[in-house]
Structures are given as C-alpha cells and as structure tokens.
Length: 68
Image (cartoon, rainbow, N blue to C red; front, side):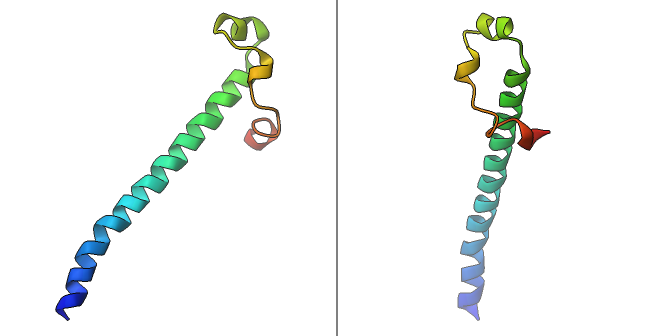
C-alpha cells in the first residue's frame, strides 16, 4: 500500500506538467493561426511596410478556409 502512495506522489507532477505543456502548445498554435490570418487579410502596402510580401505568407491550405 505504501508503494501506491509513493507512485501517486511521483506521477501527479508529471501529469500536471504534461497537461500544462499540451495547453501551452495548443495556445501557441492558436496564436500562430490567428496571426497568419490577420497577415493574410492585410493589403500588400501594409505587408510591404513591415517587410513582408504576399509570398512570405503560408498558402490558403494552411490559413484560409480552416479559419473561417
């Protein structure tokens, strides 16, 4: 019975760390998709102002229809 308690104590931090990493990764991906969508909707002169061109952005298969 004592070994079960020790196993639970060592497993709990690993589980919460994994959960926080998954949530962190999900939030990072959502921010990236949001930013790419915003950039893809900008006119060319604004992209030029920030040093980008339309060809620097991912294609519609990565941003377009999946975000609408």
